[in-house]
Image (cartoon, rainbow, N blue to C red; front, top):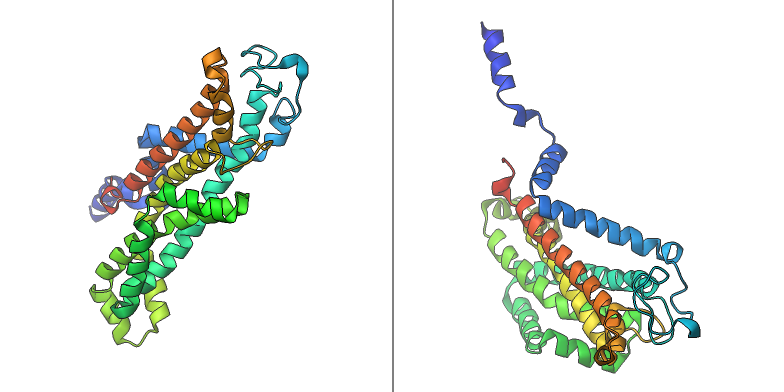
Length: 298
């Protein structure tokens, strides 16, 4: 009798036997839109990595016999004013348009998290100085600040990564500081201090893991903004410079020709930006649901 009751209880509680990965996968598959967005990001990354091999033409090679051709079987997305294949240029540009946002967001996340954690835990005059600097940086609109910094230091890929990272650091810093101020008052944090743990261990071992989850979601959403910032800087001539391909720069090249009927020059790079930003936002929304503790038991 006892054995039968135990077997019935075990059968009625399949969730207890699920691994963490199985639970994560189940909740991911339940959100179909975010699952599709995640797969699309993976596809974009694969395309960017393999871009030199899958691009049908040399993206920087002009062709006088194929100038401003509309989309056709020979050139699926048409050609530009120099006869360069638009599809090849969009594929090659994906390397820059994914690399710069990813690295800049990762850099901003690391710097903002480090400073925000120390500022929120220490408090006092250290926190006041940090926050006044952050307030000064945030007094400028992010894109205006990016324009000024890019004009001052140049528009190389390294400089663009640094510029976009600078505009994002205050967001992560303020968010982690707020989480750290809340977590440091919890009982487990006070217990860690009572037993004599050093400050670095309390901050990065005990408190930081409990504050980091919201930043992952914020970083995913921020990558969409980074893509827009890079494209906007290139559109006004402060980003990636010709002959290198970049979606914003391609839109800028085609903008003056739209009035004469060459619509494809700006349309397809614009769609690439739209889809990329959209899927980052969808993945961010999906991660917010997946990492929400209230959803883990569902």
